[in-house]
Image (cartoon, rainbow, N blue to C red; front, side, top):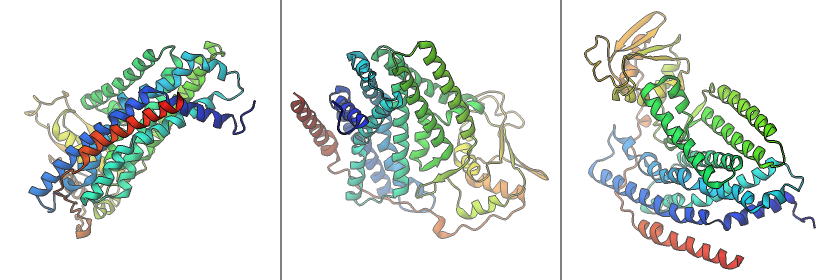
Amino acid sequence: MRSPSGPFTWLLRKEWRELMASRSWWVMLLLIGPLVGMAFISAVRTYGELSGVNGTVAGVGEAFSPLIGIWAPTFSACELAAAFLLPFVAIRLVSGDRQSGALKLELQHPMPAMARMSAKAIVLLAAWIIASLPPLLGIVLWRLYGGTTYAPELTAVFAGHVLNAGLTVALACATAAVTDHPSTAAILTLGVTVGTWILNFAAAVHGGLWDRAAGYTPTAMVAEFQHGLVRLDAVLVACTLIALGCGLGATWMRLGVPVRRRVGESLLAGVTALVAIVVFARVSVSWDLSEARANSFSRPDETALARVRGPLRIDVHLAAEDPRRVDLEQRALSKLRRIRPDIQVRYTAATSIGLFEQTAEHYGEIWYELPDRKVISRATTADGVLASIYEVAGLSPPATAEEDVFRGHPLAAEPKGAAALFYAIWPAAVGAAAFWNRRRDS
């Protein structure tokens, strides 16, 4: 008999029942509460200790930003869950049909393979949103303690972890569909995850194209979202990879299609995604949603930098692992690129660590060059970089208005009730829900 609610709705309900019957789902839901709780409690205590010792003076405002002090460490537990727990839930949902033989029965119904994969992806997205309740409970606790929240930066953090979960789900779906056994899919998924970490390590050592590619790994993307920075190119690349993973999963779910044809379709999808990624990587639009504008220069500085004529070239004589280069890149050049995408930065070094280059004649120098002028500096701070740019451009530094200085939100609070909520109430609630679900289905 035909289902009165339609085949896709029926499929969604079926996938939801499969999720509720999955032990890996309940284990992930059980563990994510204590994980988030440990991170949240530690962050609140550290934030409170700093707020009690220091004050809200200029220069330390960023230290009292809840985004950096509370939400980045709290939501980092979700990153761990997405890397090590969520893949098993996704693999179980995709591989379960093949292992039980239900997939062969489903394939007899004339439904597009992408619709089948979309149903699984929608259910897994809903599962992740439910698993994200613990950090949302942390927001409620923070408000009860008297802390402030800033909706745009919290939205950026949450959206970043949803995208990260989407990448994990797409990867797990693809590996589960391609392989014949869930354990093989789990190993492949973990291998790709470790591969992204290796890419980040190579970027830190070699820079250049490695650094450019590492900027699109889940770790780097989540780190930017956790600091309130939303890059359109990263979002587009992530969405492309999610579509590719789901597309590969849908392709390999069609068991009756010859392997040669599925391989050809997979290669075509991979090439198409690669072309799209190359195009999207050239997009330079971004938004700084942090209340402290931690990813941007002050508004007067941004206005002045936009008036600098001609392409600006910066030659940096620092090794890849020199702490000064890391400070220069994170605190100054990354902000400068958001305003002037036309800047050209060239790093020069004979070694990767620079330990024995300290006595070299030009090591540590930073040259700022416009078509008609050139200036040298050794400062790697944001203020030092701005001063050098204004000097080479012949501009006077703009005055910083009082309202442009972020004073921070110190709060000397204790994480009262957090331990009971995350270590006792949450596991008990999850256990009760799992028991009720099992009794209902039995």
